[in-house]
Length: 142
Image (spheres, rainbow, N blue to C red):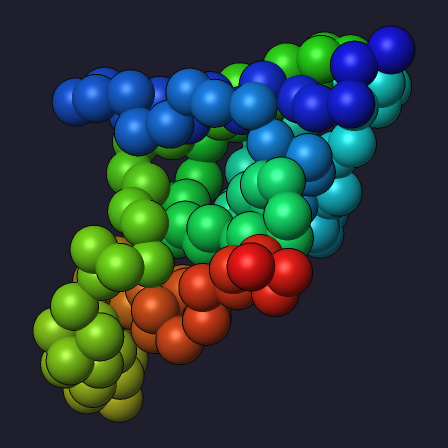
């Protein structure tokens, strides 16, 4: 049995990641799922949340994933999402401004604002804020 799992993260515009990792934690609609080599096969819907890829030596790479699907095979995890961003690509101040705009729209909901759109914008902003605050964990042995 392999000691790693191949992680592929694909959006309509590009392939964000295609490398071997030790472990993947991804947010499904039912909660977080940890995936190790040899894990049981499954397909699941993804929620809005963090994906964390753990590499050799304890390195952790966080990514915001905004919905989609994950296919888990014994040696491969494939994430298909409309939108995904590495933590270091997220502009935290822009995400904070988006959060404030969405909250203001929700407060004015009785004025005909599209509540569902505002709630989704708020969820996206909160995930981006959360993921941008994750520290990049590097190998402590070096």
